[in-house]
Image (tube, rainbow, N blue to C red; front, side, top):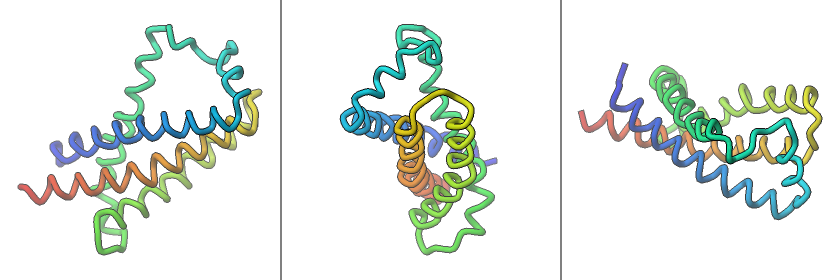
Amino acid sequence: MKLKQVIGSGIVFGVVAIMLGMVVSMLFGALFPGMAVEYKTSLFRSWEDPLMMAFFLVFFVEGFIYAYFYDFVRQLLSGGSAFERGLKYGVALFAITSVPGMLVTYTSFVISLPMVISWLFSGLVQLCVGIPCLAFVFEKLEAKK
């Protein structure tokens, strides 16, 4: 395993995903002000709950996992640049993880369609921007060896 590449690019993905998630959340909050009320139900923890700090760790854990597997799949991804390979990997991850996950979420929980669409869009943006960043950093760190 290429530990330096996995850790470095995983951290980059985590930071990018958190920032993009906040931007998308603010955008959808402005478009659908009623969504804020949905977050105040018993379905969600309050931001004052200390356990909510662990929420941000999820993006770094995802980044490390995506980076680990990027090393295996990048050989299968055609494209001249790390960005192109990363974009293809990001689209594939979106189709495999976000789409089915949001279908299950919408059919299993009493939440609005705009909320599910906002999460789906957030996943698309995070993966289609964050994974190319991950791929770029992974390959740059590898080239420094």
